[in-house]
Length: 201
Ligand SMILES: [Zn+2]
Ligand SMILES: [Zn+2]
Image 1 (cartoon, rainbow, N blue to C red):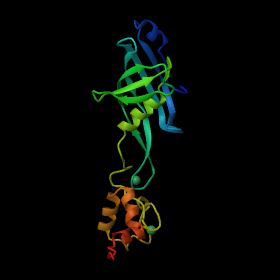
Image 2 (tube, protein in one colour; image 1 turned 120 degrees about the vertical axis):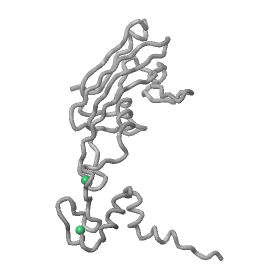
Image 3 (cartoon, helix red, strand yellow; image 1 turned 90 degrees about the vertical axis):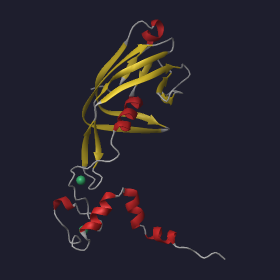
């Protein structure tokens, strides 16, 4: 298992004749986002393979593959759902010695450029961002997931609870189809007050 995915670009930066390669497997990625440490865990060891070719003096092109199985939550019942991804990586890169933490920058062409400053490049943030961009916004553990009771939180996949008879089935379906945020807004008693028109004086 690889601790953090690194690729050594020193030789490439000196001669630009060779390619650089790196491969390994990851059970998680630890990376910085802003000032906070983030951890992205995978359901099983995730293989990656990366090669970098020189394009010019300080520019290069990274390509490779990354096949993580993300752990996401079912949008209705919150149980963990493995989400396998097959990523094809392809990014321009630019070496700028003054850069401390590698970052993605949007070029004039709209392409993303990975800017880095150390010849030993840590790919953690790059791989994590690539995986998160490719992940679906929400997943269901099963298309027929019945979700949780909105009153008591009971997992309705295991059978009805005492509240099931009180909520019309249509209403349940509608609520389950809305994202979590709007569901909360609907349940928030103050949300209704916000709609009240206060007569102006
Ligand atoms: Zn579910
Ligand atoms: Zn209930």
